[in-house]
Image 1 (tube, rainbow, N blue to C red):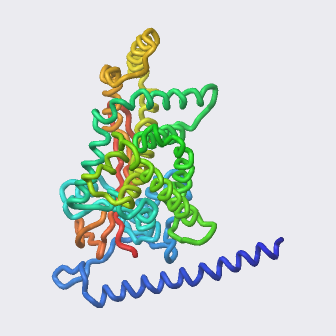
Image 2: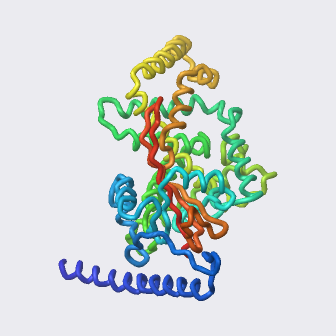
Length: 408
């Protein structure tokens, strides 16, 4: 047994070392080519330097340092203390420049937003599907946004309220007398609601397999894009292939009956001219978009309500009154009932105003960008990590922003 383990380890090294060396040589050649071509980054004939920082190991970079801690603030705080608010690093196979200040966030997301477009690392694009809405621009992006908005309009979701209430009640029942991780439980709840909203109640026989495949896929989102057997990335890509097959089967079955008002029905509208691959990529992409963000909002709400007993009391009384009426009538929750939850609506709005909903997102520059004299040559990915410590009434924010360049 020890001999077999050692042999397997040596085989793994034999496979990994050439890969790392090839990536290192490729990166060095790319850098040399850019230098010799006199590409972007020139100002008055002088090449502007990249910010200080470290790039870590070839290909791997400093990915392990970032993701080894459950709290990414540790990584960013250490880098900021050592290099200042602007520093370079290497994450998920991509060289990157990270900028840590609210001013930089405003520069990228507001004042100079036209210089950047949303994107994700190439590994995540492969997992979600290249035709998903996140990776598009122009007319096709606007077209997809219209289809998604139509499926989640008040008119479309009005009839789903009782089914969503049933999911919520099942979740609450499963927590009884248990100590739970709020965020993880909210992720499970959000995934169940997302699958209902995308595929409707008619496809319930596929829900469990869809869920299991997606959970396997999700584990690979922040893994290195090394498609070797046994790696998280390899397992995630296998799960993604199976997800695509399940969605294709659902699409085929749906064509034989009424389309419905859910997201899949919106995508399958004959007037919209989407291919099956486009439909599958965007259905899976919406699961990705809905799961963590929704769970994050709900988790922050629980925290803020716990920190503010008076607000919690008001929300509890609001729901208790509606619950009493429903108990007397024997009817499920309706859309009209949700419109009466005015205090709850204010709590949701305030939570979204002050809380850190997105933990990480990316931007891709459409041209070389110079920020306050710090030029990132050939930058075409820009990401940000919002780090806010906030309460309902008086938020205090500490923002870190990151800038990621291209990697093949």
